[in-house]
Image: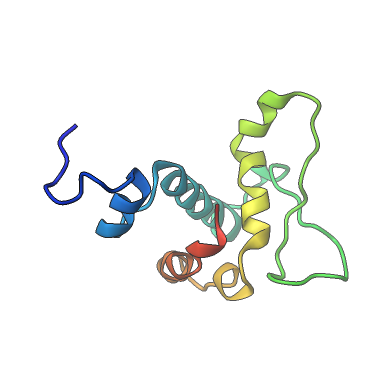
Length: 117
């Protein structure tokens, strides 16, 4: 791996920050949240209706569209898209979740990305 001169002493995270980039883990999470937004706002059809369940509670802080987290005995299920993205979605602020379009959602998600990971 080639390192740019003057940055050899910096850690991986510091180099990413220097160039304004996200880690691979955070990039994947942002992509997952965008896909979830598309699913919930645009493509919520009968075929996949049971993938995500809206949480029914009167004590909602943060966003008003919280999803129910599933509990599983097998650790392998924690890696499924439908499981790994719910906790992060529920932590997003209301103005991000209530975005009127995918473009606005992406812009607001970039601003709120400090809440993630």
